[in-house]
Length: 72
Image (cartoon, rainbow, N blue to C red; front, side, top):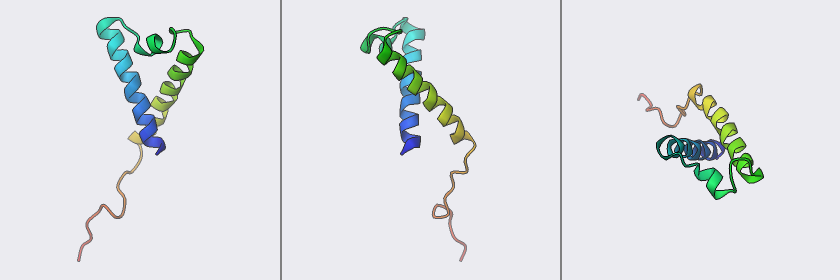
């Protein structure tokens, strides 16, 4: 559950950075009252924390025992 939430927030951050790079438009800032508004800063902080959490996904062994075929 936490992995999916972190990934969703990281995707939102990536799309926001893409809109800034392509169009010079900060979607999060626009939706939440500007870049320095308290709510925008909370969203930016959550996106940053989600990005840090997603780093751990790179180093985890995602193979579960149920997913591996059993030799008979």
